Image 1 (cartoon, rainbow, N blue to C red):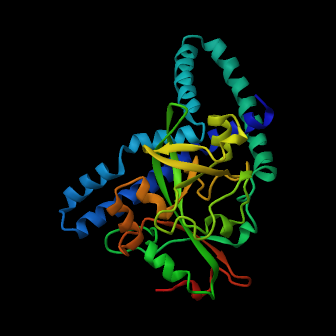
Image 2 (spheres, helix red, strand yellow; image 1 turned 180 degrees about the horizontal axis):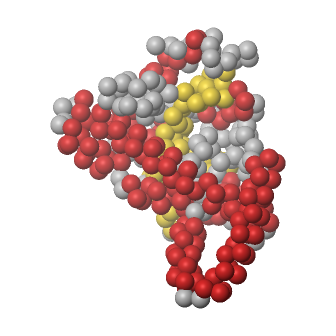
Image 3 (tube, rainbow, N blue to C red; image 1 turned 135 degrees about the vertical axis):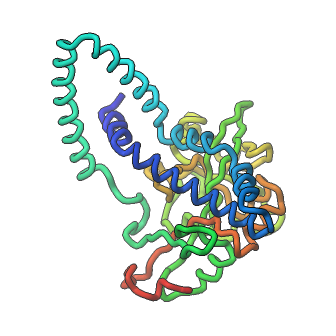
Length: 322
């Protein structure tokens, strides 16, 4: 294992608890949003919560997918090993004293390493002018107690407002099954608006990325972009992947490109393995559900990023559209 990889694992260990807390919060917000939507359709509160859990899928499976995407499964194994080691140490007090002293030296080293990593290796998102990017959410309402996502129709309206943002892009986190070479993976992916990559200024490692207006016209061929990490792990970095067909949830998608290696998605927690155009969700889910997310103003499911215009700060009231 390289030094860089080892240091990266140290950082993951230090930040694990906060990641888990953040993930719990995000899952809770998603479930609240779904339950609120079912309540609007006439369900009771209890029935809406139960329906939301069924629609969302297994919470534990989502957490496992997240941990796998961040390489955190080894932490669970390490935790079990530590518990076993502690039981062993209690039986040998003299050895325990020496071990504790050794561990104290090791913890000090970890703190120093983390300080160095924090100062020199932890960088903003690897996109053009990351300091101009902000996350945009709507204010709480009577159904949800925390700020939440934006509906697609509202996003389209907000994009017409040109005094605050250069542009806004949205994405939705999905879980799907990707089949290639007679093997299927359960992956996390983003369904993104067609300006997602242009807003961020991301350029492909190979092939091309999703372009403005791609996937909007009825009959457009379904396309998918792979992340560099997944491309390396799943296809061994084979450049011939561009143009090949894979199956998402049993439906054919053509691989058009791979994202560059430093870029792992706009979300700090749920890193994707792939991207598809938001308009092509109908190829993955029931067509009525796909139309609903694109048409219903009360479905606040999109995470939204905005690029501020030069001279605009977060404190300016121009950000408050409502």
